[in-house]
Length: 282
Image 1 (spheres, rainbow, N blue to C red):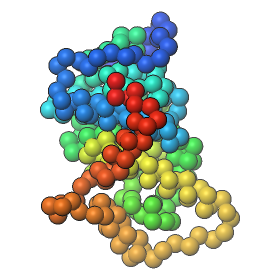
Image 2 (image 1 turned 120 degrees about the horizontal axis):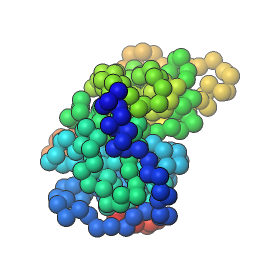
Image 3 (image 1 turned 90 degrees about the vertical axis):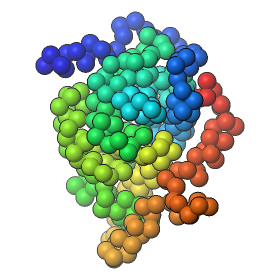
């Protein structure tokens, strides 16, 4: 209980109203070039999640590990809309929930964001980004006993390799971190029962693409089931074959290696954001 109280003290919402608009500050002077790039990518990811209709006002969270400091990660200031978040507004915290750098003390972080994201970053050193949403489609699928079904090619990207975590109430109990990490295991996506969706990736780009595909799979399943017609399920062997095909990017790099998912999509997505509003880079 004492540990829980300390975390609440660190991350409780401020009593004074936060100023309107995103804080426009310079990068922390100690930030490396690698951290700057991750900050820009993470801010872009927040904008893209909002653009694709996956945000929930000021709620939810996306985090990215700080390069060269595995015990530190970046997360959103609690109180900003996703469309307001910029690279320099992101808050840096450690795995124990201590704030390492906060550009604007009028904002702090969301306690469930710390609990969920610290659990994954601590358990999965291969994960560079963790993305969590509360979309209507994701919440609907999370409440279906059948969970996500491999009804189409998009869903077969994950097939039977989807993790599930039972609902325990609002994620403010630090003891839940162990169960979150254990249930995710080495998978890329997890359905939080009666709650929402979670996706991870080696990079911010990969986490976003994984979530985008998971969200589309949930949407199309709901549309398919709502038609009231018997479902046509592909053969189990075909589902497994498609899953193995889709686990990695379809086209190798010139050196023959396969990039993480999202490597090719990400530059195009950033160009789209730059045409619309490049302020995420600030």
